[in-house]
Length: 208
Image (tube, rainbow, N blue to C red; front, side, top):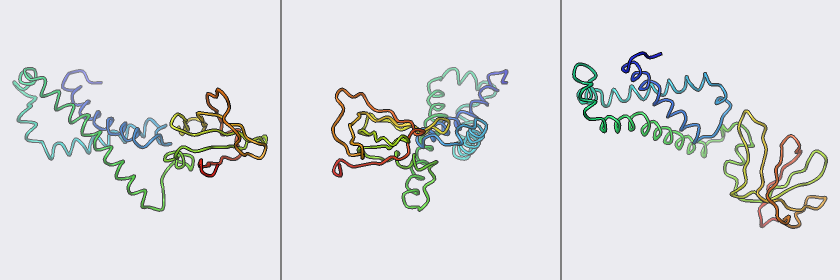
């Protein structure tokens, strides 16, 4: 554990950029199986911090040491101008790592569009990542059909540590063979557990 301010500063500079980068990547990409392993997440964050810190030294090394010296009267200079220091810290530790994470994720998404292999954890994640509003019907293991409308207020879970489930913002009546009839009055939605489902179909309004 750091016992002095300088040691604490070194730890923050060595860890925070990677943590920011890793957190932003996870938010932009969505949860993956690897995210459940805290040790692997920390290693990824440390690796990202090393890359970013080396890049800062290569690009701004002499400028940083001349403008913000940490020896002799350097601490007094830093204390006398806290705003530039805070702005620089915000830029190097938060803004640039976050921007780099978004840029990398956007580049990977473009690459995935043109590639044959899509490295999503499951077909469930692949379908719901870009699913437009539509009707959804499911045949339960009991043989009964249930369904509703998947819109902007609906939700499909994809967290690797939890069972997949689906919330449809409105429930609809279906015939015994699965044909949509009418919207349920005063519906507040329909919840489906994938453990109870045998088959799911996605139907556009025009088809319905």
